[in-house]
Image (spheres, rainbow, N blue to C red):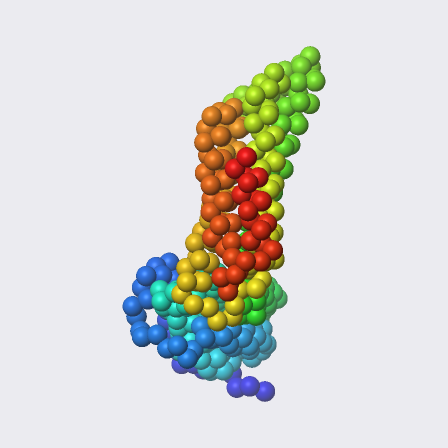
Length: 360
């Protein structure tokens, strides 16, 4: 049986958990300021930041498992918990932050797409936030045992064990998400994000379509009594598509058709360009990818703005906003008209037809 924790062991663990919490707070703060990462240390081209992030996430996952077992089993062995937590705070977490720093430097030197670094940074932030809760749990348990004054720990009510296992599961999930970045690679991360943007785009199309259809249904029920729903719509801007406004309806139909065509661009880019991004890319390719991602992210946001104009029955504003969306779509297709070897292919011919359809 493991020896009971001494008051000195427990006090040492409380202090370490507290300093680990402080360290995590500092790391989380630095993650909010990417510019700080670029100038901190020289870039080491021999280190793959995504591999470093993967390895540190695997280590943290393993250490969190050890901590969980130590926390839920009796007796409470503060010295063993301290050993694992010190390894996490002195080695694993700094290594993870080093991976983020290296990724930032690669972005600055145009050797890694900015979106990949942004994704990795967000997942590291999620890990640190989750482990912050774990550190607080360790500190709280150590303080409770210390308060008992007998060094052997108090009887657990079962809730602490459940809380610990629940917190461990959150850290595991966050670590798995970071490991997935390296597993997916640059191409996989870009594809995942573009597919999400495409889904957002199609959601906006569906909502606009439903809005127009609901207006038709409401017009058919004109003789029904005024309801609470009508009052809610009047108060909160629930403007309906006027049945007699043929011009606005035709504009909406044309807009929806072109927006669906733009969604096909996302699909084509995924298949013909993003899934086949070279593993080793030059500065020009990274610049192209960064610009392309910025445009593809912006288009769904622009479509949302346009939808708001339609809801306000402002056809002129909707037309103006959608023209920006179309312009961006044309730029995106033109940007990667040729493949990564600067040669024409099937997408080259298709992009020409796409541009004609959007400009029509």
